[in-house]
Amino acid sequence: MNKVTISDVIDRIGVSKYTFSVYLLVGLVVLFSGIVYMVVPYTMSQIALEWQLSKIQTGALSSWSLLGLMFGGMLAGILSDRIGRKKILIFSCLVYSLFTLPIYWVQSYEAFAVFRILGGVGIGAVIPVGVTMMSENVPTKNRGFFSASIMSFYMLGWVLAGVLCTYAVSDFGWRLCFLLAGLSVFYSLVLMARLNESPHWLLSRGREADAIKVIKKMEKTIEGAAGEWTPGCLVTPPPPKTVGMSAIFSADYRRITISFWITYFMGSVVIYGISGWLPTLLVEKGFGLTKGYFFAVLQNFAGIVGALATGYVADIIGRKKNVVTAWLFAAVMVILLGYVTSQWQIVIFSVLSGLAINWGLTGVQPILAEAYRTEFRNTGVAWAQAFGRIGGFSGPIAAGYLQQLGIGYTGTFIFLAIPAVVFSIIAFFFFSETKGKSIESIAGAEA
Image 1: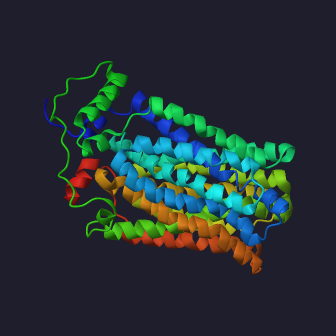
Image 2: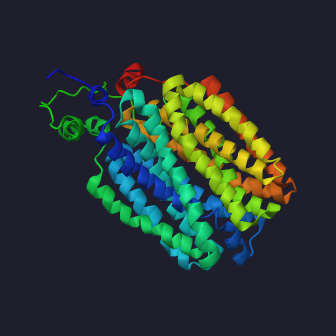
Image 3: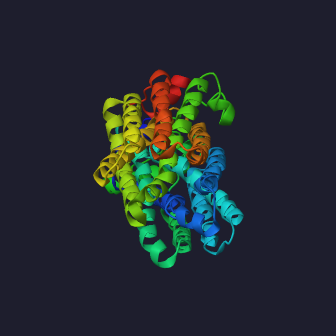
């Protein structure tokens, strides 16, 4: 058999039942993590009332899990590059589920914070590994769509959390939401049984026989039978000069790594600041619990559309142009959301801002995964996202602090629009285009 790369094989097979099976398996573990994260913004007004919390403490309710997300991302990147994507996805599901269930019984703010930090470790691990897993299992021409739209499952989890809390909080109280969210622990058993390891990762670790087994499963889904594969038929790029953290900060990657870290920080300030405060701000603005939750759910639903569309558009116009345009539009929509005076204005600008900010942050996923080699891809992806969690952690707290200073509803959204502008500027000057390039060709260029 002629020597080929794994990308050659996947490109020849194209999008198949196997592609969508991986997409669904990875997507659901991301979806459940979204539910676990988002139960806090939809319950924090009730938690704050029960425990008599200040504005800063209330904002921190949403931030504690982001602290865990930061550490989870740091660990997941390094570990998944060493022991595999599948193992870390299973571990992540167990962690965010098992540390969410006990919140049903907590009686103090401090205990709540501890469980949210620990559960956040699992959420922070699952997102970068999920993005990387998809980027390594799909054809080159479709990689933007699949690696970006996997985040739509996260947003769908946010929507489902809003629906769950809307009905559960008023009748049963906020605690039931955490109990139900923690039942996702059983999904880890499905991942153990059904998910295959990334063939790119297997080959990078010298496990060609295992990589061939995965390729044969891909072939069977579309061709009905697997081809004959012999040892040594799969080509891999020359080994990298270094791996891990030293690799992503080497001379070849330093500039793009720093730009990823800063932009992800800015994007996380916007998206987590708005998602963390919007339900509460709308309730305080006089729209009531049900309407306030409904408008926030509507924004998150629009985020699903943005997450689905951004990768498709990035495969057409390019990754860089896609994110720059999205974040400029997001800045305008967030500012306009701060000036709403009627329900219809809230509906319009909730939808458009939710669409734009999720379009923009999700649009980074393809270029983020494509920028690094397989040997340290998830380290690069996860550490960029982990640094971004600092922005996600500080965003809700900073918004709460500024509200205590008296900037009000409108001022809060003006503050949250500024990082969106910074994001678009940095992306314009420092992002490189990777549209249409195979994983091996990008690695070859570095070598």
